[in-house]
Image (cartoon, rainbow over all chains, first blue to last red; front, side, top):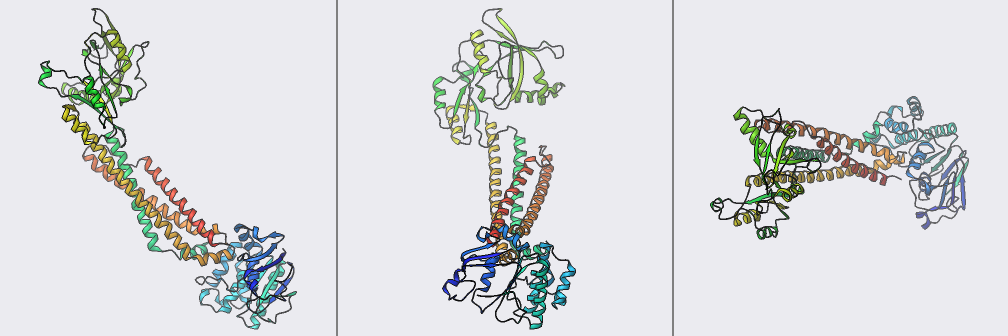
Length: 214
Length: 398
């Protein structure tokens, strides 16, 4: 899958100074599936907007966005729900976990929809990220860092061409971030999928293919 | 998707849904019971008329001593007929025509005892007659004269005469099979013809021996020699039989009618009115309960709107998100259908039991229309609600 922007800019960004941005100032921008992109910037530069527009949960933009040469504005609700099950996965900055469900139930909610992973693999991933002992706890009482890891595992429970990760390590220590990043890269590798990862600041993570200045 | 149900059912308002459930159930029982009893009572009064059907009233002049002595005539004069025609309650008026020649009937059949009697005929236009039969046609070629006699005559025989004389009772079907001869006699001696007679129906409306109008007109032409008399009876159609001015008018003019019949048909109308009222009240209750249903489901959806948006972000289609609401709705609807049919049939059983002691025939099982009404309404409510659920979940999705 390719993602292509043509003079695309979110409407709220029009009032801001976007000079020097490789995203908002670009005539056209093409993102390839085999690449890993890291978008690092201070808050308010439109990182979340970028991912949300690609994911179809925001449509307040000027210009055009194409997924595989198809204009986003022509996608129906059905297209979007298929896309979110099979082509695009999102690790939300706000996590979007259900507080009343346990960590495991939150993960299963997505996995039941896609039938992608076996229970053993879910457990394995949770072990890798050090949250296996919290799987049976309600998501609402977990720490934000633990919740972030649940959200990462959930996002990996589906096929995708692009993984959109929005500041997904913000509440993890360096060591945990590295482990999570490693898992994400592995899972992307298996799918041959691209990654767009946003971050507030220098993550100190191993180099991405491309750093986009936004 | 047990988890989906777990997430979305959490935000239901038990009180609202219970209220809507009970309200709809009450409305349904009231409506179904109303229809059930309406069907029963319609059967009991068995004149197969609807509430809005017009009333047919047969009127005649009161017989007084003057008529017995031959000082005054019993018939309606043309100007009197015109006066009745001009009354606001009279939508149609038709005089009875009678035979102007002697008629007699006799049997010539081994299976029945011999029998001979003088007879009279009367005729009114077909549209005033409550018996609809294909045999009700005069055809000179066939030579069979169809006759309608009052239901009362048959009752008189079956329940009065036959038991007292040790004779067998005769059901309607058998009477229609009896062949008898009708002799129409002209003025000149020896000028008579015999025709085949057949009873084709029993009237609850007209207390007379009826033959088709075209036959009587033809026969009067051919055999008639009596002095033409004014019609002794009139039939009038009133769209508003409850109008008290009818009775007032009849009393003022000294006309008579079968009061009891008027009264019973009025009772019939009142009963039907009460039942109709019941059905209307039930419809209003169901309508309100339906609204409560709609609103509680919508409230449930809007309480869950954050969750629905979240599920949508995770890739759920709005139809998948609607499923828990639709299932909940259908479960409640199924409950309402089952319980309302159960309660209605219990009520019907009760009424059947009571009615037996009054020797009235009330069916103990539900009429087919009850099932039809229940299912139709449930379907209607469900479809409307499902539509609303789909619309409001769709609105929350991107």
